[in-house]
Image (cartoon, rainbow, N blue to C red; front, side, top):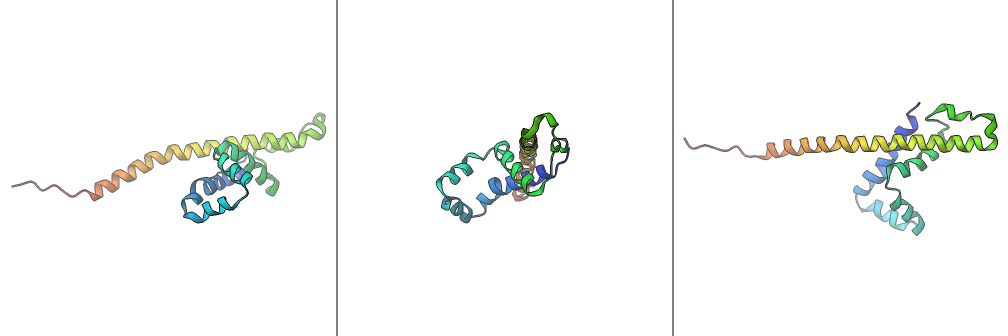
Length: 132
């Protein structure tokens, strides 16, 4: 199993669904300028698994990389359905990795954020002076 497409996929997912919407209004304006069907797709593909599947298919088409290289050579009895089935199954596997990575990053993010907030509040606290 190779993780190249999953790593690129989680990076693309984080960029388009977690980061760009928070970098000012220009991205939201860009999304609003899209035709209504594309706006609807962007709104519906917030799930890392769903968008990860399509990201994986696109990355596979652009790079030729496989998450599971064995799917590149389907059995002969599958005939002309072998190649599309391989792409489909590989994209599903990659989407699962993208979803897992997204969930792991969110799970790690909460304790990190909590520790940061605690550290900042401790630094902002003024020392209490006791009367002598």
